Image (cartoon, rainbow, N blue to C red; front, side):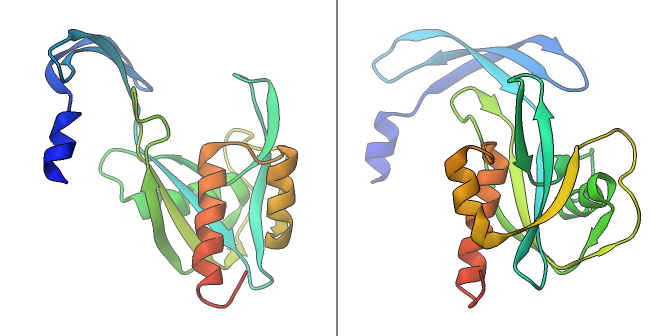
Length: 187
């Protein structure tokens, strides 16, 4: 199996930074594919993100109804945000839930991590499952969502089918949480 993997491995000869700010780093990589063809390939580096699936004792999940201007589209999303330098990803997930929804998650565990666009974007997303939450105040800072609601997990498949849930972190988080909870006799 290892020999097969080497047949498709790209060689990176270097990377040149094109643009760099607080939110995004754009680079041009000098790459060579098996067979010897060498060319430049764009690479986008973004900070890591932490996302939380918060499920209560009634098998409802905490969701936010948000507008995404890039696509001019509305949808239900899980709370989450960028991991600050030196911050533990689980602490980020807990902080983001509280800032965006006013709820403080309980019993948090790691679900999975993934790369949403592995072909040219480096942006690790780390998903967490929180079992329970307590309301500790109102959302803080900028307006993150028009509505914040506890939605029954049983409604999630229909919401996905309708296109009401469409962002990668929310889709992966909900599906992974459902698997984890089903494996424990819930959901």
